[in-house]
Length: 111
Length: 113
Image (cartoon, rainbow over all chains, first blue to last red; front, side, top):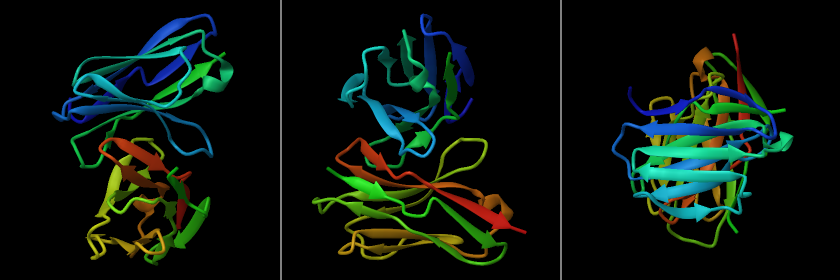
């Protein structure tokens, strides 16, 4: 595997379910990001991790819980989501001031 | 707060022609980075071009070039000799600090054969 990978690619869950999104980067980068992409809205930065330490949390509801066990892996734990949380969730990584590399995303549908 | 504005939700261009996508941003900082990203229908976002604010020279990558006007806070993307594979959503992004990126709402580019 190369670049940034995300699993699953598609996820359908009920409001009472608990699920997790996984992101892995094979680029040796030190920073990893979660974004939410909804139609006709700018990408919303959710969380940033630098060397496993969270450096940004953009007022994300607590039903989204990130985890970064090492600089190559990033998780987004989901519980008691709402239908408006349905979106494409993108993971990205970067090294210092260089550009971000994005994964293919997880298309999440909350019923 | 920094903002990025892409005023063209959708653009069309004839194959082999040139098209310019607009982006403006608002910031009080003097040192920052600007990016154009492309998101094809398969959804994986890829970098098209980047510009460091301290560089006066406009960045160029093959058929892609930017017109960076720092005083006007404008960062437009020019695509020359448009190809069918250029059809995608294009996002303008501003980077402040080390890890904070701000994206615009995107412009959907259609390339007509």
